[in-house]
Structure formats: C-alpha cells, structure tokens
Length: 78
Image (spheres, rainbow, N blue to C red):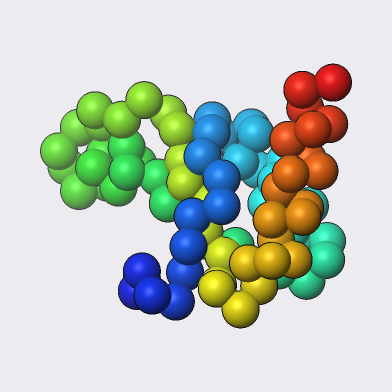
C-alpha cells in the first residue's frame, strides 16, 4: 500500500474499526484495514499486537471519509 495513495483515518479495536468501516461502505467508500498483529500471526511470528487496527482510505475520498469518521466518533462518545 503506497502511503501517497492512502491515508490513515482511524485507529481502534476490531469492533470500533468495523463500525467506522461499515459507515464508510454505506456511502461508497471502500476502506483498507491494516492489522499488524494478525499479519505477524499469519507470518508465524506470533502476535505481539495489541488488538488494534488501522483504517485507511484513498486520498481522493479523504474529505468525505473524515466527515463520516468524525460523526461516528461523536456517536460512540455520546
């Protein structure tokens, strides 16, 4: 994944990342989830991750995605 094409918009546990992912998909944005712990486990290195994941979107969709991310974060804090 090129860092010039995608940018991280959210970081959290599996449940919260999936909530944000679903909301983004509802408006036609297809995010990418990066889970270092799972990658390490699948690579046979054991999981030293903390169960948190990064959520990335294409830079062309960043402005639209951030509106959704901020709305969902606000709903989760309420």
